[in-house]
Length: 360
Image (cartoon, rainbow, N blue to C red):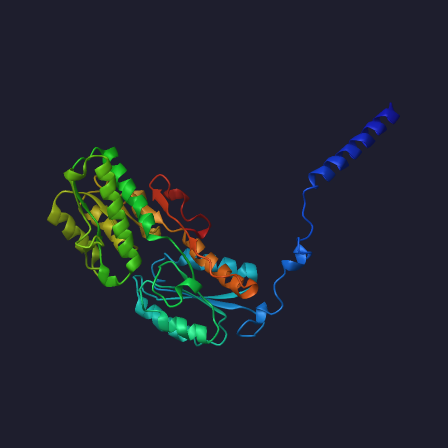
């Protein structure tokens, strides 16, 4: 019996070895060109001494508003990427809680002169304002990546990678607003889209336009467009509202119309203001109010019901990918590659999932 059991065990071991061999038969040990993959995966010998030649890479990321919390997960993403590749990442930005491109440009002009910088990441909310920065960086051999807001006119755009959410994603909020109206049984009234072109953020203007078009299309497809007045201003980029006093501006807008049943705000300035205006006018739960970004104020408003929904940009990626892209350009010579971070629609039912692992 013992001999039979040993024979069976021996046979099973051989069978297992054969099975394992067959399972590994499709493995690739080296490249068609003959080189070893492990060797090819190593960092290039001169990467750590790129530009500054100080034995390590240093990247700077500069944003146009570090004071409201939106860019916190962007900075986290950049830090994670830096840790993965052994690079130092300087986290910089305007201290203002609202968009402040002028202060950002001031910081950029300083940092581009820093001899220790090996790569530069910047947001570009003010179209046409960053060409001198690009010229200065290129003259010094410093690669650039842009993130978050997109400037299609920036110098050498096709050679600079961009990570961010395409403005067309705002259509998701427009579609959700139309569905919300139907779910609430609301069949007439005004839908307003407050904003301010004076802030100079073309990306926000495009968001408002995308949301407006989606609302109009949705109502038209439902055969109800004639029952609603959808107003995004004369250019469909937003009803002009004072960005320095957005809450009172939106409250005044609501009161002047008298029949507001839906609203959309396109950025971190007007979305919290929209929520406060909804609460102040006693319209919580009565209208369909949608906005942008998922900072603390937006999350509180979703929980309270002052906001029906908000769109996130998955900003962790907006910090993580630009750092990795610059590294790939330096170490691998990989051309600038864009990344669309898409949109994440969050409601009261799903807001509890936001913020985990520092992503909002």
